[in-house]
Image (cartoon, rainbow, N blue to C red; front, side, top):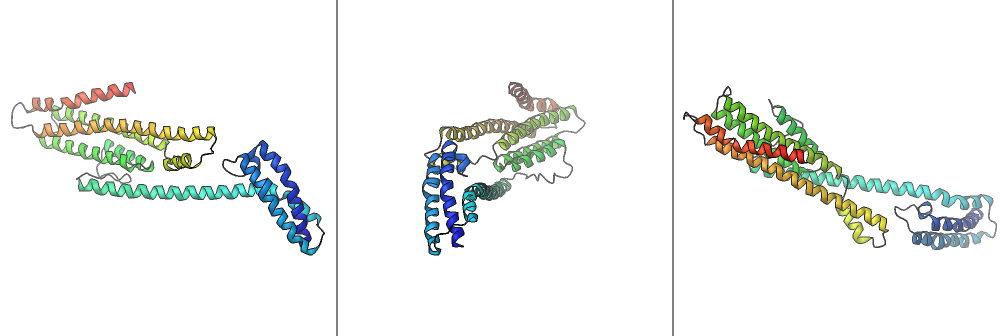
Length: 312
């Protein structure tokens, strides 16, 4: 056994030199780290492994001098086998950390969603369940459910809250219209059409928001910023790549805020319409004319929404 250990020490010591040369040429081939440098190569093949080989050789001398051929071969192949094994082990650790981080982010999103829904219920908002649309839901409400599900999958419960607000306003305006006019009246049909156009505009914005948010779902801003702050010896190429990730997140958040502002304008238009129609006195002979005037804001909003859509 000591003979094998002595031969292993000789083989390991001799193999350090060619791996040192390979690592100095291309560090990734000799060091199984994510971003190895030549300092890592020097530390591993000029100090650590030769020191380990020396300790093994000194230990084996208690059995006398007699290195075996098997020990020599094992020592020569040790680094060749250890590099892919260590790379696989580090990859498994990295994937486990990513899964753990993803689970933590999912749990945080669930907690945020629960807090937002609790706050929404206290504010009197109707909460849509993406998996179970309300009984008798029309096409628009089902689209809102699908959109909310997409936003939740993108881990943006803060944006999904806009879906509940739009649904609440949409249902409220419909209820006001049904209470003020007969469904066979032309005023009711035209008003309901405008309300749906405004709501569909908001749905389109929300779908765009879900698609945009999904694009940066895998970017952990805190992790990227932490690496930029901690790793001072990072290569320029890697630093530019990390900074570009932060820029993408910032650009995405800017676009999401712009789309959210458009949705807020839609919600305001629906609120204005509900208030205006509620104030209409249907007992008066000119009630239909008053309702037409009350829906003028919705017409203007629809025209602006189409204009923004063509511009985008």
